[in-house]
Image (cartoon, one colour):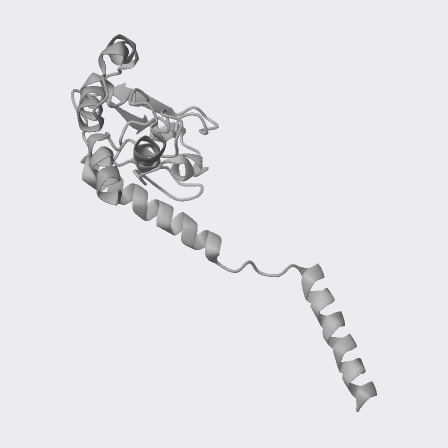
Length: 189
């Protein structure tokens, strides 16, 4: 099954945009393989990807071709108007492939060779300084985009696994509980 999911994932454009309704290309590939999800949910992949998915999954893409043609968009990349950037880091947090660099209160910039053109960075920008511009062809390598997305997901999951520092109230409760336990031990002795 995993090999089959990987075959499907390899056909997807690796924009990690979520336009399919899933959190990335791999979750969509898993949904197609396991749940029988429709093959027409990837606008960035367009008709080419629709036909390839239909062939691999033995599903007729013909009913979806007109709809997909209407949804197809040119290749895009994000560009930050750096003079207007306030360094809020919201675009960095939104980018699924870590294609934006910068630090808090400093200018940010897009790594054009890594940007998948997903556009997820545009909406959270509070100063509207990010433009999506048309480019002749995608500038990113889908395999590298997949690897960058997976590395980001692992980092996010790892951070979620880290123990959370106890609050001041929790520390006080633990201190009181320890004192009660010591008192009980003394009484029994």
